[in-house]
Image 1 (cartoon, rainbow, N blue to C red):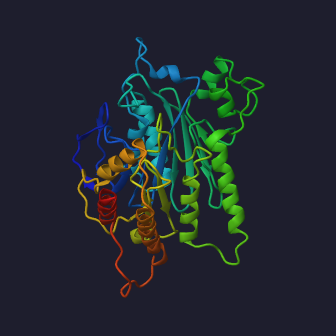
Image 2: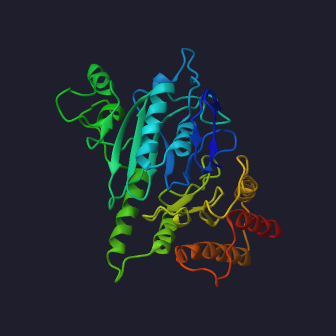
Image 3: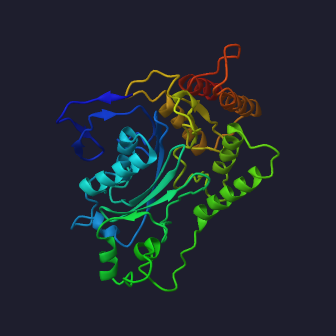
Length: 376
């Protein structure tokens, strides 16, 4: 929930304390339970953000002399702080950069592996524009603006090329000194910090990043073939299909290693009304089977530690996956019906819903799904 703080207050992040802002905003956060920060989320001003791990040639800056990660702000801490304080995507971007430069990034990024650390990329968006922010080492960065009508995705790799909007102060000098950049050609962020300026490096998108780009291209092309512009529900349903693409790896269902920790879809119309921003979360590790539940900042009263029952639901879904259990057709049908009910809320945005059936709140939907799975 939104909060106000007196001067001199501090906030305890995952590993370090930093000065607290005078005001923090109402947020919904998707996060591992062991850390303070989040991997994705949204705030009541219509700003959404997500975080990805990346790796550059400056990654050794994150390590102490003994080779262990130096504890600073995790990328997930930076994302949460930016969402708690940023009232637009550009504002969130600026806050993230300011905190990165002041406190640096780093620290163990896995509860089970204290040696694993990484640099970070971020995607911030609102109804007007979006920004990709990519980092290198402790505090170096580059950002790219995505204008209205454009599309963009990030996926565990450096992706900004020479189309950056701004760079951290010393990065070009560092790259020139290391012979990653010749100092005269247009500075290519990925070519320099990602490939060391090697002439024959393959810099094209690959894997999930390439698949995501193809999906977005196809989505835009399909939208242009319709007789009338697609509505919010059309876009959200198609984004859900993309996030359920297991063949490309976008949907993680690997029982031996990584899995999707959660999935989020946000609809941000050009409106200043908080009731018009809609967010959908699976609150589960398996977006192929788990269904999306609708959240708005208008329908739920929360405390700071209220997880709406989502951690319990996440553990149930993860247990189903690890035990390789199969759900009955009737359970799957009921789950699909719950998602359809959630999606109907998009049809009623800014409409008179007085005579329509009341839909479940986010917390109610989670608890109904828990009850359903426990009965199976």
